[in-house]
Length: 301
Image (cartoon, rainbow, N blue to C red; front, side, top):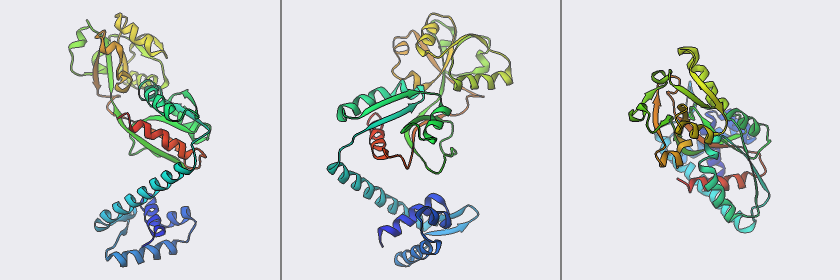
């Protein structure tokens, strides 16, 4: 057994194809096939089987492959640790982020990162989700922080890596503390369609409202604003109610002081969870620095 064989296994697992794995690793398909066959003989079990879904691990092979992936991960960590001892992090990190992460995780993460790496120049741009993805895909930024509807089903270009922040969010309606709605445990948008709304005017929320109005008719929208503080202030003063992801309400002073109340929303078009993560190009020169920055998000959990 050698590391080359382990890398072959990892690539086949990720691509579900020996031919694609061979192409990605710049070797022949027969080289990968023969190498894995030798390893199967050494282990005494079959690691993969062919099916309509491609080349997938056997039931016996799954536990072995899990150990293989763990070995490769530890090996990569060791390489990075050695590199960190011999070289210092430097340069600039350009980040594009959706507002929900910018308002919650990012400030604390950035503060801790800058204390350890004051020499790194960090530039942050706030954007909507599609814009963040476009910036990363076209190599205009080093790292994108995004919100996804369905992480498992989300597909990125082959050169893009997704790093989960292991955080999920739902949708909530925020209402004034003295509203009759404040006593509700859960609501659907259809239940509150006749109430006045002040809407957070980002494309993401606008699209949700459009989907709802196509099915149920127009909402009573007083105004829209891209300033979340204006929205929350207006709700606390009784101007209207609004919609936010639960992540955008973490440690919120309006919630903590009791001036507004947050109530979970369910039903169409909000019957899904949001997952949050970072995306970056595998070929980006600052890949090592990007991974290091993402570790600081893990410290926030």
